[in-house]
Length: 213
Image (cartoon, rainbow, N blue to C red; front, side):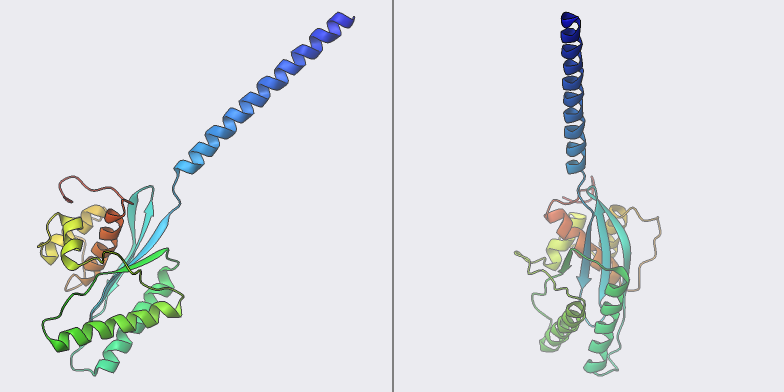
């Protein structure tokens, strides 16, 4: 009887040990699968002027998706105070509708055609900063900054690409339908391009063959 009991105990122990190993292996596989899935990242892209473009993208498993994009045109017939207020409220409304964001990026500004052009750009930056701050956000201080030529280069492969070319590359990256209608002036497409350029530079999404250099 004693011999039979010992055999049963050893058999039970081996089953218990086998189950333990199986559980450990299953837990390890589950942990590995969980770690391999990168959490979604939301990015807000800004192409700032007194007629700004704005875009919200989400990256899931290295694939960018368009959540929304838009632009607003202000009139030179209005005072700068009115135009800046329009920019601020436009951006604030967009943030409210598409938040939360993990990162906010904007295209850099290097120099204007003249003093007046420089003033309008930086007034638009200030208006955007007020809108961002109201919701607890701020644009990243990118090093190096995303200059207009670098945005074009990342998205199209050419730093001298024209707006329609940039818009077409953006359409391909975001898998939008042929003939997707951008706003007049392509400011919404430009904002998408700013976000995509950042994602490409940070190796958060993959290049499309024949598009990015």
